Image (cartoon, rainbow, N blue to C red):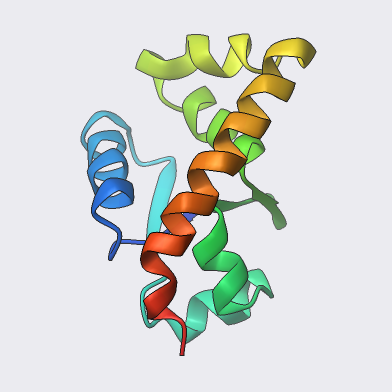
Length: 116
């Protein structure tokens, strides 16, 4: 079974990045838009706010979020495999994690109006 990627298609920046990944990835990634998607809430056991706040993936039944989710996605896309290896190195992962959290927070604020 492939990896399910839960992303916010209503966010123009998120959509741009995910559409790029969709074009260059094969069928081992399944893309799930969280916008008005009650099923995504059930599958991930996350709230709408949690899903909106960070990128999530499900791999082998485990929900992974944030920077770690990006590393997993990149590991499945040959063009970005080097990023998964680079950012898996502890000092680089820490920097990436905090940079991701800052960017994700501002994207969350931008898209917060989606919360019911």
